[in-house]
Structure formats: C-alpha cells, structure tokens
Image (cartoon, rainbow, N blue to C red; front, top):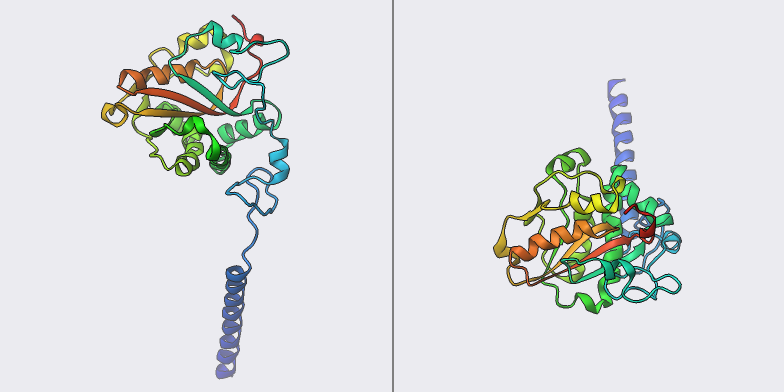
Length: 264
C-alpha cells in the first residue's frame, strides 16, 4: 500500500515537472506580448516603446507652429518667440517638449508622479528615447541630468519620476546619466498651487551642484516631467552654469499651454 502511494506521488510530481517544462518551452519559443504600461493591453511594438498605438494616439504631441525658444505651441496670432519667452530671462538656452500638458498626457504624468507608478514613469521615458532619435538639437549634448527631488520628497514618493524618464533617453543618446551631481538643497512648495511670482521666488537658490568637475565645460541636457513657467528648470540651469557647465538645454515630457490663466 505504501509502495503504491509513493508511486502515485512520483507520477504526480513527474506530471507537474513536465507541465512546468512545457510552459517554459512555450514562453521561450512563443513569448507573450508585452503589456502597454499605460492601459495594460498586450501589444506588438516595432520601436522600444512601452505604450501601445492606441495610447500613443491619445497623447497630444507638440506640433508646429511652436516657439523657437521653448517649443510651446503658438496660438492664433501669437508671434515667435512666444509671449512668455519675450517677457522672461531664463538660464537655459533652449527648452524642448514632447507633448502638451493636457488630456491623456496630463493623466499619465499625474499617475506616474502620485500613484506610485515607477513603471509608468520609465515607460514614458521610452517616448523620450524614440523622440530623440532624429532630434538635431541634442547632437551637442555631453550629459543628461534629471531634475532632482528634495530628499524628504524622494523618501515620501519612493522614486524620482524625472530620473526614471531620463534613463531610456540617456541610453538612446549614448550619453552618461548623472543622478547625484545636481541636488535640490532647499525644500520647496508645490509649484502647482503658487502664483507666477511665487513660483519664481519658490525656486530661488533651490539647487546646488556637488561635483563641479562632472559638468565643467559640458553641454548639459536637463530633464523633467513638466514645464509650466520654467522657473524650476531655470533655477537648476543656473546652478549648473555656476558650476562651470558650458550650456544647458532642457527637455520635458510635457509643456503647459495656459500660462495666461496663472495669477500674476
């Protein structure tokens, strides 16, 4: 009786092992389709994109005409450069953006930042990587630096979404990604709840470079998720220039298009 029971258990274990082996072989020769990082649906991608075609079609990508200095879409009758660039002095020499901060892109960036979605942040970075393939304005870039979070905010959020977005971009550009060179040394308030004047004051002296040799004489690409007034990026660019950077360009996943609605 004991011998029969042992044989039965052996047959069961052998069957389980065979099924596991068969499943492994199926995955090896017929791997499952990747899932879209935004909607979760399986899809086939020709490029190294983590988003499906359906989700990409919902994103309001930046289209011409745009401001030659900041890539902000120009509205009817608006001149180039745009009103914001005419009225402000920034420490970065060029601002670029992939999409408009509206609609589906607004939803994605909000989720990547506040819903603990590091996978979504990194997935959005694959859009950066494809966008950068034929972007001539990035040819002189020597290093990529994401806008850092203050240590307290980083501890609360668990990750820096700008850093995760910058990783695929730096890999596509074949440029080093510096994550500890620029630091946010002053805890700032959330920019979204401040007036335009308050935003500028809020970011003053908020950044410092802790390794000047890393950026000295280099053209730096500063990366962030959203650009609205541009004050945060300008303050970070100022710190890099003071540390010896030759120049600073900025790239964001999205750019705001309704600055007239902000309080002066």
